[in-house]
Image (cartoon, rainbow, N blue to C red; front, side):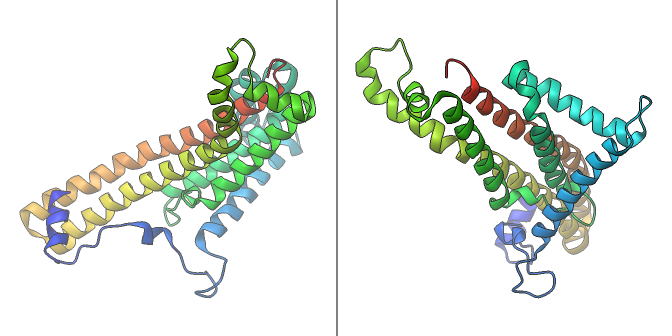
Length: 265
């Protein structure tokens, strides 16, 4: 990559990828709101809906491939996320939402390594923000519904067994952490991971192309080949990270719901 930086500094034509590569014109007109990220989100929602529809349409004792895929995904979210984080008593009723959430984020993320698509829609902050706000509304609503408005915030800000002078500092920290920080961390964790991963992949692919085609020479061929090979390795790693981030977002959502429903909030 030092060769690319040197070439860029000398003005030899290589332009490093940056935030501009996350901006897209409208599909039907340059000023249209219907851009590539919007299309990816719509297709992701349709794919998730079709997957679960096909899995449940003709359920049988001997499952079809579609039913097996849907049941495996549903079972993973149920056993490894919902029941562990929320508990058996309340967890089952949130499995449909959490399974849909995990699948939707996973498809948006994986779009970043699919040929011809190659853009993770969740790298645009608006989409993770909407999902984080939905989670925020759900866990606040459930906590207030179960404990009552006053008791919910009282237990949150003034946990029992702590000397009262500590509350002066602890109460605002707990309120800020639960009400403000949680949706922000959900949003930024997913957005920044997808943004950074896509940016690094772009750098390796575009840099490798530049070194092989434009820079030339033995150095360019060797460095470009290494860069292209690195992009292949990073693609597999990025696929793992994309699924991991879908899992983390869903798990944290489940943990927040479980905390709101806990008897001792």
